[in-house]
Image 1 (cartoon, rainbow, N blue to C red):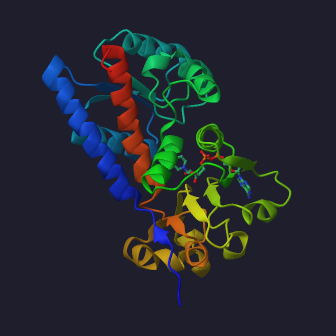
Image 2 (cartoon, rainbow, N blue to C red):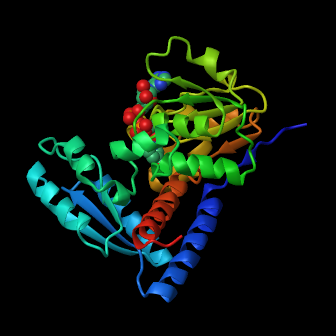
Length: 307
Ligand code: NAD
């Protein structure tokens, strides 16, 4: 008998979350006449950043959150960006501020991110929010990690006592996801590029989360039978990078567009072993925007004093 893992449908789950946010935004508007507001600062002309900002704005529109994008030249100084943040910090109609990364070299990313009022830090990157995450206080947690946990909860996966392995230890994904898992009482192992024997850890994982940016790093023999596998990686594969092994799973899309997206997990090899698996695309990706909208709603409610 061929075993098929349950596909975790991030597109469907994120739509459910967006519908819930939309309902709440509507209620706030009815009772206060106000709507949550999000400002996105975009510095320079990075094409990928423009695409991300565009989809964040479309997400806002869909749920009734007011959004604006503030475009700044790629020659701006740290002080210029700080001035803009100060203006937004003091604008009562703006409840969420997000600075699209990466920033040009001359702009001090840490100073910029730390200038955002923690109450408006909907990306959850401010050290105050990170600190609160460590000490399990109410906070704005980063969107992708929150999306992963939300996805698992809505799939009714009980994280308590689970052997969870997080591959990747970035500030954006790996570290905050590990903390959120720990807060749910999972037993967490964190692996990274210097981990001596990755497979030794991954084969013991009941829950395997991968965020490395290495296409198909995780092969079939690295996964335990019945594991829950969450693939966070987003790798754009173009003709020059395409080997047949990388493309089997996304062949049709590649042939149509001349490029495609794949994850960090070799889907075709891992899927038969997993109990649940999130695909790329259509897994964690859409959850990130849904959680950003949810964070903006949360920030707006806190700032407006709505329970
Ligand atoms: P990063 O480059 O900041 O961190 C990569 C991590 O992977 C590091 O901890 C590194 O040590 C580890 N790593 C790299 N090669 C490894 C190897 N061979 N073995 C073990 N560990 C290894 O990346 P990031 O920002 O955390 O993003 C990771 C991936 O997730 C990227 O593909 C990115 O595009 C994707 N991502 C997706 C979303 C989403 O919305 N779905 C959000 C953020 C990032």
